[in-house]
Length: 325
Image (cartoon, rainbow, N blue to C red):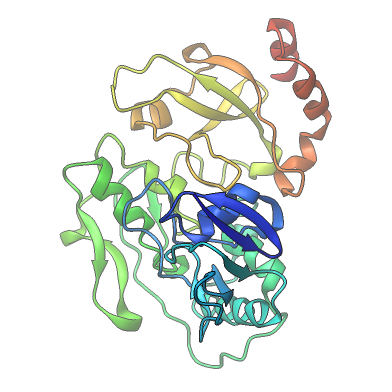
């Protein structure tokens, strides 16, 4: 085990652990934001630069600071290393510049975007963004491409984090989409406009940090904060599917089904398209109870009344029926 100090807090982690994952063991505001890194996707990280940190001390053997900021998602820790995240004005200033860069071509259409309330970039801009932009040129635009009847692609919102590409690469055997072109012409697209249609293609919706990939079956039906999330599960016939999901409901109607996410916004286990798109009847699921949300989340505003009850005990059958109405 190696000892690393992040913003003055010591933590012991196995050798080879990244600075980001070491910070996640501490938790709270110490954890750098991440728009491209995904712990369950091999090869992810090192693209968005939002997780930049300052190494004030390289190791016990090398007390010198790093010459420049480093990406915490791809930099391993060393014994005696000292890292500055939110305590470094240099890091906060650089993060503000990264947010401004990400918003250069990202349309400010939050009021009509289905990702509003769940958008990592929206949260990042609120914490580190500026009220005005220095960008004076025309933004990137792309022609709309139909990639199937389940997933909506808005390439103008894409920040090229590559998460969706890694997801299909590692979950399916017949990926048909990827990064086409280079530079400011680079875009996520399908080859010869094929539709994305496989058992686990819907997971690209969950891993997308912005509103570039959204659920067509939920599109414009409701704002997410007007729905109530419930943990549920079913015995799925697909051996690769966990069957553990979050149901987003209005009354007894299931508007959307997503995979469960952890405190870092990452999917706990991937689910198949049958569970996501085809099982919209409450009888198909065993409802475990209401999902506890982050108190800082806008989605929490309509659900805070249930948190105290859920923390005391698991709701029984009568509780579930009352909460579903």
